[in-house]
Image (cartoon, rainbow, N blue to C red; front, side):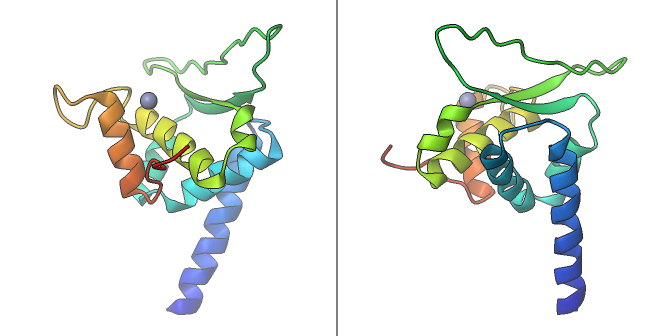
Length: 139
Ligand SMILES: [Zn+2]
């Protein structure tokens, strides 16, 4: 079964890469988003990847930059977007991956908690840690 698993993983990685390729992200950012997606539980990954109104975008912040967050509109479904600053490229990798996982957790939870009254920030950090991307202690 080891071979089967390796095959599935390679196919999965290719699918994730092709799917992320549509968003036109910076290559470095895309590679780290891909790593986080590979580590997501299957149900979370398909919740995001199978949602035609979900998208990922990135931008370089600056004084002259006005960000227009693209939103995909699908009848009857609210758009879900995650926006990443390219400045994460200058941060340590564990920090960058935690930011990505944290934002994906918000999208997955639709900016709510895992249960009523849970703080959405706490929920996003807990999920990110559960997926293997804990908030770095020092940054
Ligand atoms: Zn947050």
